[in-house]
Length: 407
Image 1: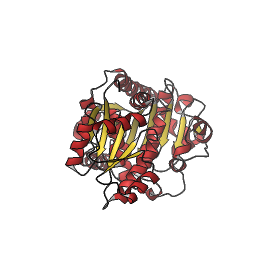
Image 2: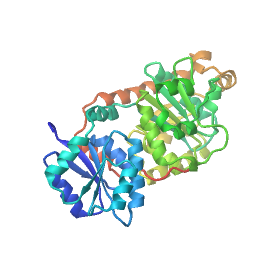
Image 3: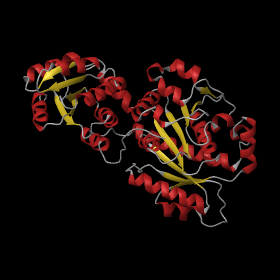
């Protein structure tokens, strides 16, 4: 190998980890996975540009371990997953091969043989996959504790404003379901649930034909209006879907307004590059959103790029926006005018406020917010790339949530 690579090891044994570290010393750096979680391993893989993943199989827990391998292979089919074990057990070997493991290595195998195996299995365009993971689209979430029309209205106009500069996807996952599609007068044959169920089929053609397409070029994917449950998908499904969609869009705006506090909500917030909390001046709105923000902090959501937007703002009424932002401990990104008649016209006409009321104060504010969001994304994308240890620490920091997604 002409350059040093990075490898991930999921093992329950310090002896196994030491052996792998020594065996791969000449080829690259071995990074131990801190949790036996698909999401965490994928995060770590993307962060360090892993060339292979080693998973130790044990007779007592091999069923759970093979399920994890199967999930990793589904998410990253071109990234080799190699099984290591203390003995060459026939049952373990068959179980590993059935779920797609690329090879089976006995612990204690000579370093030269381990490196030769890795070289043989390494994808030829591994560097391209690593670069693709780092330059994928950015995700901005709109979060609010209260369901209603404000979050989808803001999310769709923010997405429309960003679409004017770069290809953008609006994921309308808030409650009530499907409002953004109705406001834009769109219909689509595909929903978010459909996309989760067909992860392997998602490509540019499916996106163009199945997702909602606005005349501005904005792409929209919404929750189905009919009832659904979180049991229909797992957190790994959502993670893989987001990762796939990042490849096709420069920016993804996700409306999470009114989504109940759940693993599903925390997973989406965890995968976002920026969170925007949308609140009103009212006491009930501030109270409920403060409780949501407290929960986000308890769940260790990374709020480094989070900010606050005060909707339906009346400057002459207390409390003022700066005081609200101070009480939340978040930077104030901006305020939005009530613009009741303009909003109602959009809800009932299928046309955006950009078309119906281009000079409305609401529209002007949204465009300014879009510039902030795109400016932050551009700075992140074109800034100096962090080193391995910095990326590693970011990937395994406690600010990342894991677990099965439930509604």
